[in-house]
Length: 207
Image 1 (cartoon, rainbow, N blue to C red):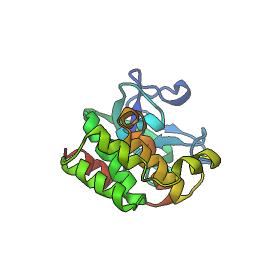
Image 2 (tube, rainbow, N blue to C red):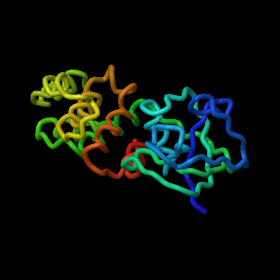
Image 3 (cartoon, rainbow, N blue to C red):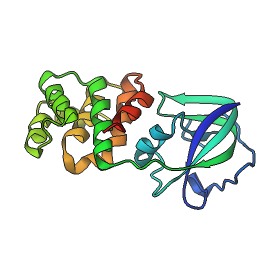
Image 4 (cartoon, one colour):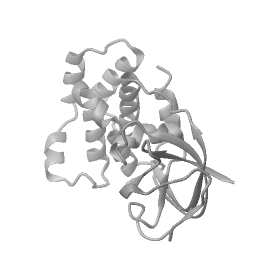
């Protein structure tokens, strides 16, 4: 039995108000792109789902379910996946994620794709708790050389390490944007490089 994890709203609904029931099998075509109706969307890990929820479904106060999945399969760089046949088998307690943990997640994802020395020095100091001042964060942001220019002329879906690093680094350094964009940073990072999102999510929760 293959297991995956599903987020729903308070009424067990998902995209386009699709209604789920506990224990009931659902089936779709398993065809087309992952973002369309041919797939049921799942996560391979609950924490990854909760960290990435803001950039995916954006469900407020989501419920979390363990699901049995089978049939056709499609994967999006480990960020999310799709199956053509599934049923929800158990509701789980939703882990509570703090603002600090979301910041850690954003920074850890950024470090996977952005190797500029001064920025990584700031990131390591933030992660260790040595320096979490806004002044240092603002200064570190400007070490992303040319990032603003790149972002203005490049579609945000472009699979380039430079653009991915910019969005990851930006959301990890500007405190006012971190909470809303932490999940987005991981998404863009995985577009350019396969990273261990499960390991990063677990590490982020250790703060």
